[in-house]
Image 1 (spheres, chains in turn green, yellow):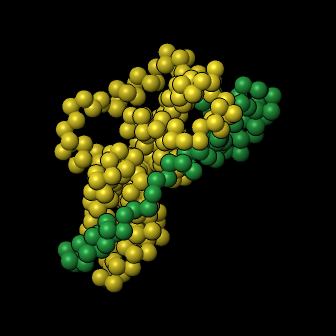
Image 2: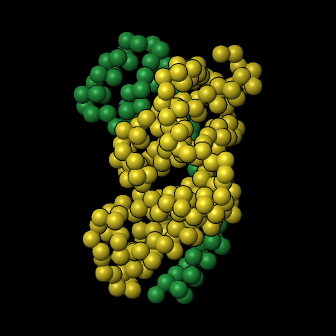
Image 3: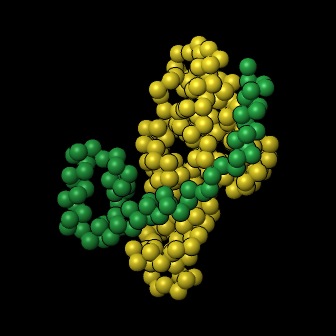
Length: 70
Length: 193
């Protein structure tokens, strides 16, 4: 169901939220889908954040701002 | 960001805005650059380009507004206008076409992957990251902005210059495609669907 992402993303209005929660309480396929979507969102957050920006780049940008930026 | 009134910062104020509002987002920007280009050198170029532009146009940034969204928008535009053109990607599909394709009813019917929670929990390696990288860049982008960076739909609409309705539908398609990929991996890992 397309609307499910509204609660996964915290974008549902109060009315939509109530409608969706009521629906999830009685529809097993949607509830399972909701759990999957929720988990994927969490996994993206924890596994796709990449590393820190290289310090050499930070330095380089600072230098460029100082020399050309003014 | 174009609509906001022009500021008139002193040199010291510029430096303060740059240090306090822009610098803290550099790792997020680097990661976004990497996810756009899938290449760490190109990602660094994009970050550098974005920050130099941000400094040059700092007077159109209003203190107290969302600096991160402002920077993401600059990077997105740099990616589209400079990076893509420079690379002259001839096989680059127009994304309106992609959108039209994935919005067709047929596709929605095909894409009903039956991924389960326990299957996903078995994916402890790079599966999620690889699946994300395998998506077309426009789909990859909405997932990163929403799930990784936590932007609201309205902020995403501004960053991407598209209506909120398009944000929602693109996100929905992107997630279906991602789940399709993950289902493929699950099969390769020996899970039965």
